[in-house]
Amino acid sequence: TSWQKHVFCPGKARRDEPGNQENKSLNDVTTVAPKPFSNPNLEPSFLKISSIPQIPKVERLLVLCCRVENFYPKDINLEWYRNDGEQVHIVTHFGPFSDHSRLYSVWSKIELIMAREDERAVYTCRVYHSSFQAPGYKDVFYHINTQGSSSRCFLHLP
Image (cartoon, rainbow, N blue to C red; front, side, top):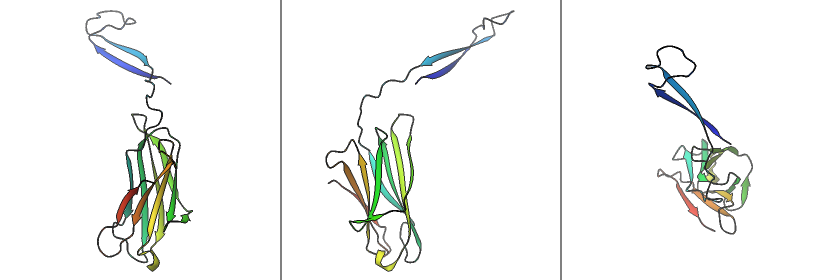
């Protein structure tokens, strides 16, 4: 992979233009090869679950979004669980997508209509990545709280 960089140099003459060369400009094209990435496995620097709304209400839509940012390589897998075991199967993933520094990010979300039995539920976003030590994943937990204070989210290292 390589990129082209266009350089505009005021006051330089273009070779293909006849006449007074003093006030002409020169456009130059330089091909730049990217530097090789030095770290083959970079652990995500950000793992978090957020909710919309912040304080869930029974019989209303709750969206949980798991954000995993700044990892390398691109291959990653996110899974959702309810109450330490029941896998959530209707999941939407966004990414992974790359930023200008060639690191990757991914978002994953689930949507649910809050039921009474969800009031004390714990949702887990399990993140599998090659940069994690055995067992190869990290869990991010989200404790639902409908009592007026924001729900809690925390990271668990297996």
